[in-house]
Image 1 (cartoon, rainbow, N blue to C red):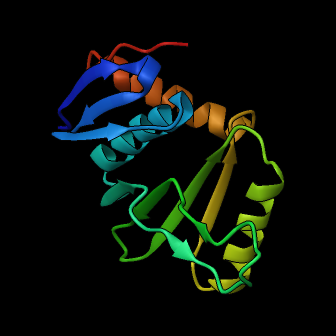
Image 2: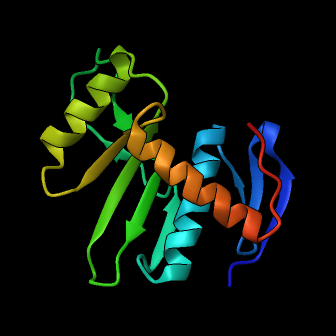
Image 3: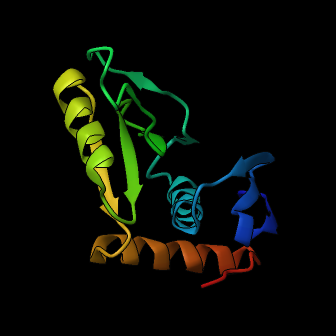
Length: 139
């Protein structure tokens, strides 16, 4: 069972499984709750928040030189994937995603926009998980 202590959702700080996180958005916090649910169910073995920055081979004047995906997932089958949560995609974000796909073709990246039905479904599952563990949920 995951042990979570809730600190302050407005600043998106939380302690999950004894580790302190400072999420950049409430959407990332909600997705982390969903990942805790998946981990309890055995659907993922492990997850990490922003564990690796990918550098890009680009010219000196390039605006985008690296990319930091939001989550890393490790599955029981031994495979892994990256997850990016986006509220909106600006030009810099689109360029980061394009460069990541071009320069790291063997990496799997799932993009979830916060308005997509798939993200909303996962957030609901995360909310149910949080309620089960007495974690305060804000809107």
